[in-house]
Amino acid sequence: MGKVGWSDLHEDLIVLLANNLSSNINLLRFRSICKPWRSTIATKKRLHNHFERNLPTFKKTKTVVSPTTFFRVTLPSPCPNKGWLIKNRQVSESSKNNLLCPLSGKPITPSDKTLDLMKLGVSEIRQSYNSSANSARVVFLNNMFFVVDFKNEIWCCKSGEESIRWTRINNEEAEGFLDIILHKGKVYAFDLTGAIWWISLSELSIYQFGPSTPLDYYDIDNCKEKRFVEYCGDLCVIHRFCKKFRVNRVLRERTVGFKVYKMDKNLVKWVEVSSLGDKALIVATDSCFLVLASEYYGCLENAIYFNDGEDVSVFKLDDGSIINKQIDSSSSSSHESCFQMFSAPFL
Image (cartoon, rainbow, N blue to C red; front, side):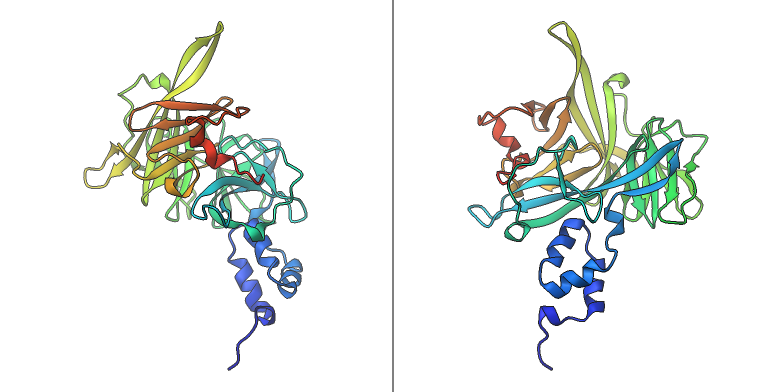
């Protein structure tokens, strides 16, 4: 049996391959391989979950879900093993790709340069969703969207033409929810007291999963944010602590530290993660995830990158110190070098 060239693959196989792509950037690269692939995929509706979509009205507000994707981008030289972290959003199949700040999610001012994706190494790190319906967190699973709104309530809605309304997922014992995550095929939620819950997809009910995370080491009012993250296959929780400082007679709130906890399955309790090893934790507005520090320019090991007001900052777990970089800073000091991963030179 003779070899079959890429351009001679059967249309059904091309469609099957395209359906397994996980982002619109990968689809764009896939279509650029040859003309038959481009024409085959152009006639199909692909990756509908990766473009902006309208959902039923949520609390009298039009609901639009916008998927975003985090990528690691590398150049062939001089250091092909080092890369940058970028965030992409494409609202429709006909629109251009929008680049966002990985931490704040704010649009990056486009340059006049044309970005040739075929000359770059592009690998997807993580995908997340944003919603216009006053929701802080969004999860997509089994053709259903789950959101946590700013009133700390969980709502769900089917995706597609069968969508009619949003359904609230509630438990009388829960006091409200802060975050939601998809972990190993299940949806988990984090409530105001630090307790973890899981959502039954068949019943659309919510049940407590485990004990509350510790809250007695700090004044509870200083713990301003609690987030989920996956670490080494485990479900973990991040606590972010803030204090108010007076700067030029103006009272400002600044981040002063983080703590990370994971569940000890043998002791059935949350234990503090003292070190992230050779990894760095990225705390973005819509998602938290870990990266291997050695794969990114300037990235610090055992550190947490986050957005603090108008600053991009990094918290070092080994000594508890924080380095801040103002977004408009052009400094090239050693302190600023740890933020190189967010400043790709080709953008």
